[in-house]
Image (cartoon, rainbow, N blue to C red; front, side, top):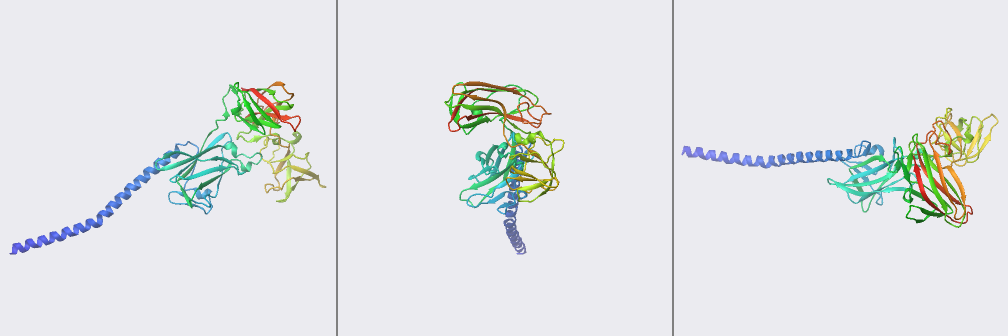
Length: 447
């Protein structure tokens, strides 16, 4: 009996222990399972982030990345929120507030590629310059992991606005998505490469065809099998998409031009030239009458159209005011200007002068600033000109090289500060009411 009672007690104990063990397991195992799943998720996230970072770094050595860690330093609008692992943009009528970016240490001879990494496939973006002209739009690239990749490429030259360096390399990035209140982005990646339109080989011959030219104010009439083509317009001009890097070699540009129409035309050939950042250099980049006279600003009224300088300068209506002038001419060719053109200059009794512009003077001028009077703007260096009658043909050929001691916008030489050039052709009807037609052939650049 006693033995039986003892056995029953053990059975009872065993049952109670088993019950407690089952209860313990029921409580603990989900926690263990959750912890293990958490470790796996964390491992997956870490691996994914590592792969994503490697994907971004593969875009090149010079890349710029915007993500949740830094976006609010650049995009401060309240519609932009930095979440734990993404950027969230709240949209208005399907569009975001534009992200304004201005790049440094880049060149107009480079291309920029923007890639947007997101888990939302139905979004798009566009890039515009500061004149609100759209210069590129996005397209779908191959997916990476579970992410969609939207991309768009554009030439940084398209962000340049002549004579207004404060807008150079500045652009707007705008996102849109239909029927969405917000979109989420993992990262925005900018990468850079040399433009394929820049020719930098030390020697060779390049044949310019219709595909290599921008045509302005003219209509392409026809293109022949021998790579010749015809353009019709009252005042047409066209220039090379290709720009040539200027070192110390000579360049010879040659072209055959025929008047293929009925109206006489005046044909000019020449160049457009650019700085090391591929910014346009023109006649306005050089001193008026080649006079090196630095003027000191005495006063300027913000919002007004005039300002006072310490002496009376040589000038002409339409001249421009270059900023940051140097006595040693180290600022020439100038690339920074006051807005507008000179309308008038009045000599004051005390030897000073009031310079009157045709538009309000911005707030860039202050007492003590040094300026210079520069020529009016003209985008071209002309190397040849000829009036062609109907049926008449002319071969234009010109040889030029760079001279670092030369400081003029002239066919004699490429000036100091010129690093790239493009060939140009201009055709103006002698009778402005009639169209002219010119045929272009054998357009070559030898170097």
